Length: 129
Image (cartoon, rainbow, N blue to C red; front, side):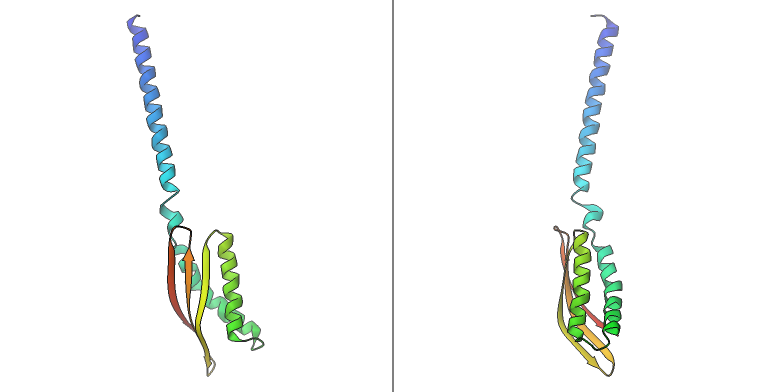
């Protein structure tokens, strides 16, 4: 075999090894990305609940205008949020601990459990308006 043929064979072998190394590195990175990072960062979902749930609850109580109990209003809003999060593949469950109406001020103490199948977070919250 001549020198040019050997050089061509070695360069082809090196290119194959490089291609295999790059492919396995990319595959490894993709697999890692499927199990960590933004997918398991529940901060955006928590922020969404913290900023929108109390507003939705206040709106629902205003719309109900005393026609249903404040517990039923809470349950209706909680059910809507749970459904919307389930559509995105995120488990959400609200548990009302107490509710009261004193001199026109509504007070709700509740907790919610948020999970994506890997991470589960339980947070307690008090909302007054």
